[in-house]
Length: 248
Length: 337
Image (cartoon, rainbow over all chains, first blue to last red; front, top):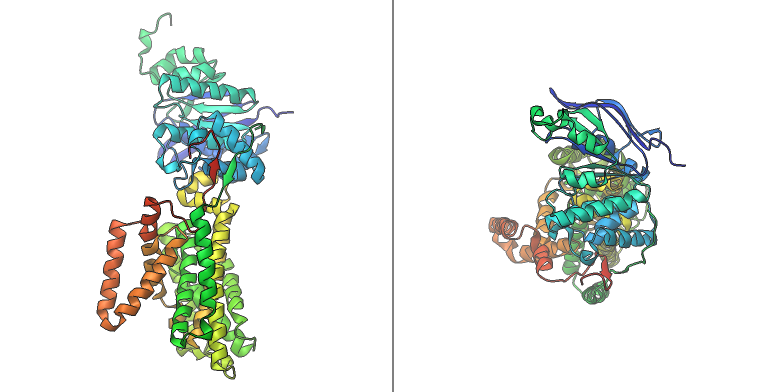
């Protein structure tokens, strides 16, 4: 029985000096959901991920995974409990091969034995289209492949919740479609996905629900197309004046 | 995630590394015969070489892999040396057995010390480790029973014939060289080594992929203290005399920087290459007084500017030579070679 909600972020806030980057944000995600997070640059999207993955400690609020309070747990412990994440600015292990990068994730995050980890690597590399480059040093990869590797490593940890931070940015339409297909396949396995993405059409193709952040606060939540078309979101996110909107 | 895909065939050895291993084994056997024919000054030189190589391997493990730039490893060299002297002179333990015991003493001190220095990061960690080493130096300089600031001689060796002492010291040195280099290789090939290499490349990413960074660094810190402690004990077994300034002095650190950085930081071969270069230069230049130090400094600067990854790093980047291969090479028709 999968607990519901699988992940809950409850009233988290984070300030750096006088700058509030996360203001009393709450959200929940269930297994099999794809929650999209939208918001302009500086809205606090990545900080929210950092609070969930444990890279940043919130000033207030709590994070729950499967009902357990994980707010005080270090990142590696959260990863082992099922939170897999990618970084917006790829952080590959540059001196290790692509295979070894995923191996680290499977051995430590996934707590797999050597044999199992090998099989996880094979599956994940196939799924993310990196198999051919398994022996390449991660430091020599192109930007696109680095993004794929971020995705592959996060998957390699065997997550129940996957946090994806702008993995479709800078991709061609065709490549973005591949990412959408992969995210759909992951969702069908019962993994909860939270996806920060500026490439809105990619996000809308797979998201079951969307929240919008602005200046650290959650300003909208709901069915993806309805949220996107709401006047408030159009104004803060798309830079479109509300008066232009028809039928508002 | 369900495991459905078939396993990949992974190789870790290459023909070059098999040849390298055989050559290293042959060199080890040849070195072990020295006491039967080589003059004692050559043997003393090999012992010194072994000590420096062992300490360099440990420092490379810390700095090159763990990202722990310690400038206080002399703390463990000194603790190993004093461990030897106290156990051999005062507790009457066989002085040769005291080499690993000196290492254990250093490791025992490293456990509480790590609690202090691990609170610091980056440059603060470096300075913190140096301060800790100075504290140890001052503490030992103030223990009258250990000879205070002037130190003491290793009297426990009186009564052991000179040729026996030299031969056993020498063999311990060969064993230490093999054990530290082999030990580092074994460690880096293991899961812990993979974690450590990941930490070297991105600490944040390693942590978020499930690597317990703090625990991994702690293990490496204590292991490096053990190795440096053994090397310190061996060094003072060879020198026959210890003083706080010699044991805990800062002069070890430029040597470590020189050997590891020139040779190639973050590779196992690097410290070996660097230590060889250092000893060759010392043999040829030591008659020229201060010119020796000037040339050493110039070589260091030239290498750091034109080959920042060291001489072995330069070779490894241009060739596929690996004496100590660590890579997992996937052999599969779906994968480019």
